[in-house]
Image (cartoon, rainbow, N blue to C red):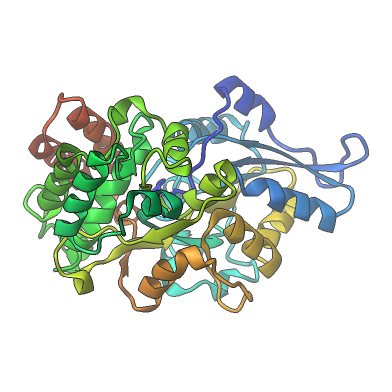
Length: 421
């Protein structure tokens, strides 16, 4: 997932600006105003800034020249930059194989440096290692774990006199009650197409994997399809939420940043997003209290699962002229100091054990689900190519605009999946 990654954050810059700002780095021993300079492109707006400051402080004389952009824009450009030789020294890379900026997609043509020789690579848990590697070699420094669910504004809940639902029936009743009070349950920013998948993934986790943890293996073996599986149920529930009034008016006319504003200020009771949104909500409303909860898809709370997996990490440009400094930055990100700083700012959890990190109380439920093995990977991380996700994202926008149907979308996803890598 972008998807994930999302760790997928906003503040878009123009293509020209991004290309210009990220065009290679000075040599490790070279100088720019007397300083060694590292170039970095990131989707971690709101968190990478503090990590960069800490890295520069720990490495006197080093300057990090960085840009941040939204996931959609970043993914459209990263391949072009790498192919044209204008990519930065270090860049955001998603786990697995789900989007144009993912590990498999970028490692296969040789765009990323093999990081298997770095000290943290062998310490990654198996669940992280499998999506950080391509053909047994580690290419992505995955620093955090993320989950997708409902993030509630506690003050808005108190004002409405409502509590987070733990069953599907209660969820729909919650949406109806919230709408009646003039405060929709959830903000939905479907103008940014990566956002369209999040509610669906939260529902798929339980409806599809609750009954079959081996669904991905069956897909890979050609024994299952999207169109003839509980994916149809999950998509129907997504649209039922829309028809029930769970979201604000005109999700397609609302972008990610605007959806944050709605949830942060209590114009909605919450937002269905990755836990990374918590830090952004706090930034918009420092006095607010925001809590992550699972989004129920059935009437059996004990059967609910959460999509939770490795978030976006960082890779090193295989053609960087600044390799030593690039590796130093990646290793700082994977150190207890860098990792804890990142996940604290993002409202996430570290990928490595024993970092001394104390999880924010807002993530108690996510931590509980992870420890109880009640999570499944972000769906796209195990798909054979990035086209499946792109078809899904554009298709969901078309469904919300009345230009497509669930049946058509799932058949198109099946066609792309069968096309292989």
